[in-house]
Length: 257
Image (cartoon, rainbow, N blue to C red):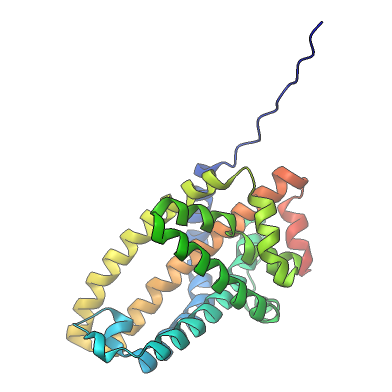
């Protein structure tokens, strides 16, 4: 008599469904997404322009390497990461309310997002650095490392795990990193198309209306890409919690009630 072991395949992440729902939530709440993301985005662009120059910030015109101050670039990057963390925190809350069909209340999202700005900034920098180092070897390892830490922002703002956010993301993404890589690639292609159009439009506007017009257009388009990315993170996190812990989206969103 032989013993047999039955291996149960993990439930699918549902990449196609997550991507589709990300665009659906964005489409239904585009004004709210822009309202939440535009302020931090424009502030980041203005600070970057003042620190490193408008040519570098807007990607318009030729810039000599000698004109770029490395300390200012680093300072600008840290500020951008902090503002991106706040934006992500705001939009993750919006994503859950939108998914549940609840009213979107932008002002109610501000305090929870600001409360976790320090761990979000530090951990985003660490995760980005790790993914960047991995990318120096090959693109795929970089994407895989990104997938490992991808749901850290949601874990920090939803579970209030603070600096344990990276470890929580490692735990949740285990067995699902390659599907997450697939989702990131698909969303990256969409964002690339948006940025391609943005670059063309910004070039035209910068030539006709100057920096202010280009800044507003870039801010709007960046707000949309931030929105897509943050909604994607929120939905991946929710799906992983559902698969691994049986936690519903309603349970997740209840932490803000």
